[in-house]
Image 1 (cartoon, helix red, strand yellow):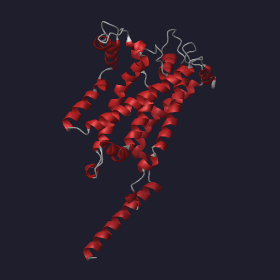
Image 2 (image 1 turned 60 degrees about the vertical axis):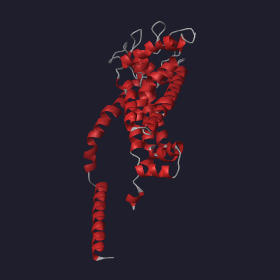
Image 3 (image 1 turned 120 degrees about the vertical axis):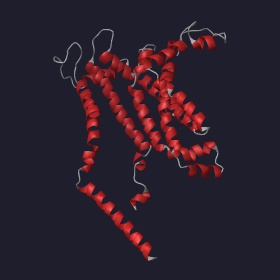
Image 4 (image 1 turned 180 degrees about the vertical axis):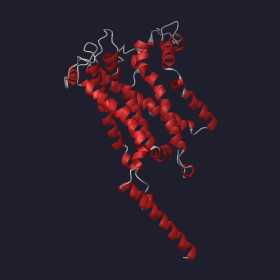
Length: 327
């Protein structure tokens, strides 16, 4: 080894040693990391942990519009017991599970992944234009977007489906929103959710090193083999993020369903049920405690699902340091 090489390796070793000392200093006593993360921690506490604590507290009271904010009493787990024996609980729970699972698999993750794979394997300009079309449902105001679906499924002579498909086939036209209510709430929310996953997956696919994609082509890998053995392993983290985020989003969102049916025709999912009990009903008796108990159950389910997803996708392996950095 030449003198020049020796000097280079000594300089490199000293630099690595200095960086290691800095890291050890941060780990052992420095509070720089705390002040760096303090703004984010403050936002999380104010807008996540504090609302969760308030929700849990109110769920243990009989607070409602009849008691006001002064005459309420602490009733412990009575609201949760009421939910457990409520005759409508199984119906709302099963509808929510079915709605989240179907929308997540076929649209928010499934359709998003399909669109991303297709548009990244065609001409770049055509792929960009096609992805832009999928963003229209997300950027359209909710009321206008849902009203469009209402007109699509409305009875003759207004419904587009009836005029272009049902009547030409000689079938009896009808109002398809109440007739196929579950299908409509899945479609309305699915096309919005697919656009979000499409953006994340497209960015992840395009970030895969080109050398690896070219090598798979040289080795004779088919399109499906490339997806299975190259693309999917590289986008595990985006898959985890989209699956977790969209599951929690579908569990807690209800605005599209509220505008479309307001829970009628057996479309009142759990979050909409909580909203109706706590903030809107026909009798004006807002059951804040009972509604918060319904919301608290969603929070617990969301935390459990998040943990399951992280263990299934091996989150600890995804965020660990590369092996070359740990040598």
